[in-house]
Image (cartoon, rainbow, N blue to C red; front, side, top):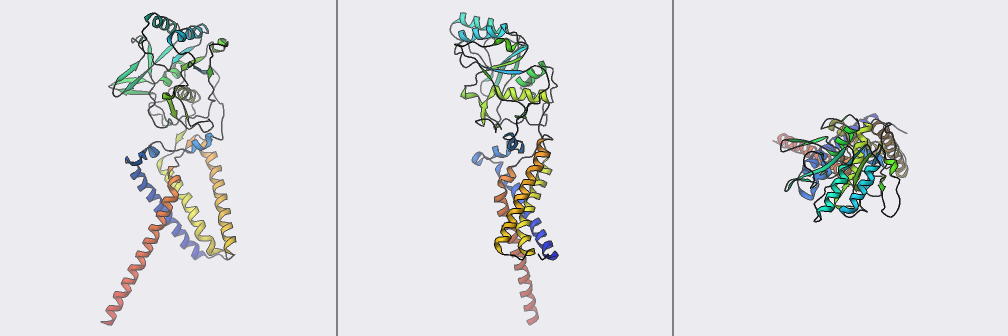
Length: 379
């Protein structure tokens, strides 16, 4: 093995230049992706996180002792009459509180509606849902008259990662459903911009589906927190980083549950600053470019051996980076967006072209200077 310090310095400078050009190309692509073409701005606005990658590997349950949060699926109870019986049974179970992720519209039979309202009024610590839509304004259950506690349940984001404790709409400050539930449970509610992502791995995604034809142990809900919703409503499914879930989409009511349990556990995943994100991408690109550049010039072996060494070093580097990501990002509850890494192969190619173009320009300028010098000598 022959080590050439001079060559290493040259290749290190080349790797630095290519990596820097690649990061610059990524920043330029990021600016371009903020336009409306291909709706690609969603990729940037809802950046993929390192935490998403680890959700498929980890599933832990580190909630503090206290009340459990249960989700009851009401999809098997199709009309107001059946749902009134459902709520009567739920009230008899004596839960600590009940939140309805349902907005009721009035049916034609007023007697049935009165039965439903009477059954719902018996639920303890009741929280009703309301939504705000730009075209129609507030959407709420027909019996909501302002005396009940209402909470906002809008989940308009493309992928539900972050969360706000309240929204300000037309000058009104309205708490969100998860914030009200957590507050009633005695949890510390973070500020509106909590600066953290929802940790979807801190609890399971189980829910209780109640069948009208079979018996159900209502007693298990005593003094517990219950969120009621329709888990089979395809209009209320959301994109979430549920890597261990059969689908990346889940119902809105399950999202509320995950947010509540993240608040209780205080396990927010905090994104690192954009500066560190670009530093990490630069280091990764530098390692890969430098590996390709320096090994063939410092090791005088066959091409097959050189390629094997390059692949081994890159494999070791990737494993090391995964290990570091596990320690730093997962254990410390930090996340880094990886959209730059997704676009890195394209940007790396563009960066290399930029360097080749710069070198060609330098060579062209040198030749032009030499040509001008020769012309002057002849004169």
